[in-house]
Length: 199
Image (cartoon, rainbow, N blue to C red; front, side):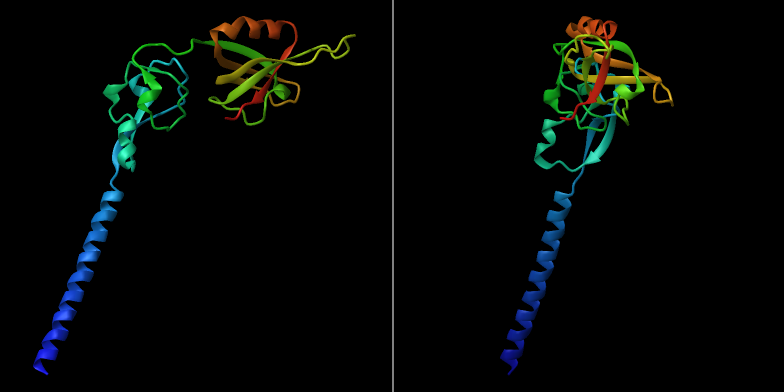
C-alpha cells in the first residue's frame, strides 16, 4: 500500500512538473514570436527619384521576425539616398527600394487647372491618376477619340477647389520629364480628364 501511494505521488509530481514546463516553454515561444523591432517608415508618400531627408522618416515598433533584415532600421542608413520606387505613407522602407545615386526616373511638377467635373471625387495629394486628353469643342465637325496622355501621374497638391459644378480645380502633378511637353500640349488644344489609377 505504501509503495502504491509513493508511486501515485511520484506520477502526480511528474505531471505537475510537465505541465509547468509546457506553460513556461509556451510563454517563452510566445514572447519570442511577439518580439518587436524598431523599424523606419515614411512619414508621407515618396515619389521615385526623391532624395530622402530626415523629416521623411519616423520610427515604429513592428514584429517582422526573420524578414526584418530586408527593411531599413536606422535613419542614418538612408538619409541622403534616393527612392527607386514609390513609397506609400507609413510604409516600411525596403532596402531594395533605395539607391545611393539618383538613377530613378526624373519627375517634373506640372500645374494644371481643370474643371472640377474632370477630376474624380475624393482626390487627395498622393493619389495616382491617369491623364486623358478630351476634345473641348463638342460641336466640332469631326469628333476625336480621347487619348491617354500620361499613365500613373502623382497628385502632389490641390491648391484650390470650387464648390460649384462648373468651377475649376488647381492641381500640381508629378509626371516623367519626358511627358511634360505632351501634357502641356494636351491642355492647350482641349481639356484633360483625370482618372483614378489603382495598382
